[in-house]
Image 1 (cartoon, rainbow, N blue to C red):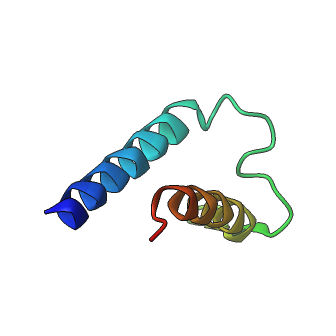
Image 2 (cartoon, rainbow, N blue to C red):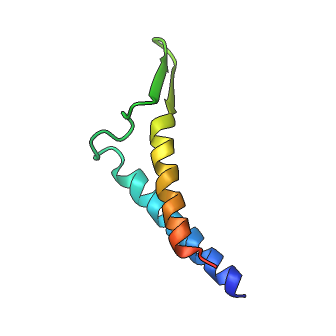
Length: 71
C-alpha cells in the first residue's frame, strides 16, 4: 500500500505542476519560443512542435520525480 500511496502523491504533484504550467504558460516570457520550438505551416494550417519546451519540461519532471521517488 505504501507504493500505491506514493504513486498517487507523485501523480497528484505532476497534475498540479501541469495545471499551473497550463494556466500561466501564456504569461511566462519565452515559454514556447525556446530554441528548438518550431512552427510549421501555411496560411490555413499551423503545426507547433515544442521540442525545446518539451526537453525543459522533461528535465524538470525528472528532477522532481527523482526527489520524491527515492528507494
